[in-house]
Length: 439
Ligand code: AMP
Ligand code: ZN
Ligand code: ZN
Image (cartoon, rainbow, N blue to C red; front, side):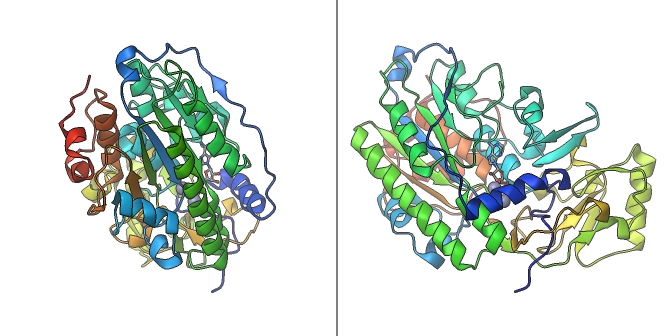
């Protein structure tokens, strides 16, 4: 197929941030690998004796690992996880928009993006009059942008140590806490070194040893953007990360600790159909603040005027809603950071507010960010294995906000009210694990 010659990688991606996307694609082809893991240690209290008696959860995200890649490409190690534990053959449902930061943060807070506040990889906040950009340490490391209580903060609040080998939000102090151990994001950190760091943490004395650990890999997402979901490069990236899971699994087993391993993804990937759709060709956006495809008019009258412009110039490639009238199942109607009106792609198209924001051309084949109800290609993998999981259990599709309750249940942590529920995932847990109460 032909490719889009713009680095507009994802719907909602901010043009401002695309140079990093371009770099990461380039890095993927000639990896500049780093062999040291510079861990930042936070002076949190040690594990209480109660927490020391609890199991361990290792939560792995393989960014952009679509739910059907195991069937399409063959993944012996993930298949073994499915045999020994839990799988979700029809995929886990991402929250809207199916982008990296909103979804990783939904998984660890149990909140839809508009409730935790990270509504895009980058967005504007009209109340703060400031932009959040996932590549900028000033915003990505500033806890005042983030709502909810991520699992690492929940654990630390209750006297249980946690560690993050990368996860969106993990570089900020949120809900008054940071993980006891974390690293600044480095796409080039060697894949095996990441595993060894996790094993290292699990080898610490019981009082210091984290019980909740995150681990992250972007290889499959990079391959999907650069080469598309059907490419030989994708097959290679899938096989590589499957091998990494095999290595992780056997090293975790060798620790002899009661570890529950969860392997999931934030979203899937679809072949994009060029060309980029430029919204200012359909509505007059002169003087309107925009971020990617998000629109931030100065007042309600301007929002209504833009909406009417779009109604007068319809396109089969997108739908436009006043924010308050967004379809309820998208859970994207209540936060001013979402802009108004909201433009939702009707197919695998990259939407951008303005042509002037089109950045340096690079080759992009794949993208995500779309509504998973309309595009099943957005669905993500979910596998789990360990002493608290049933064997050979296949779950029906569930929403990624339900993972919060699942992990809180395993670790017996008291969880705040959230958008998810244990119900859809409860069958994954052993009888014993289901019976436990927070303590
Ligand atoms: P997306 O296109 O939405 O999947 O965004 C993926 C990009 O986010 C990848 O290029 C990753 O390298 C990058 N990324 C993932 N986690 C982090 C993080 N914690 N901090 C900064 N960038 C990240
Ligand atoms: Zn992602
Ligand atoms: Zn991506």
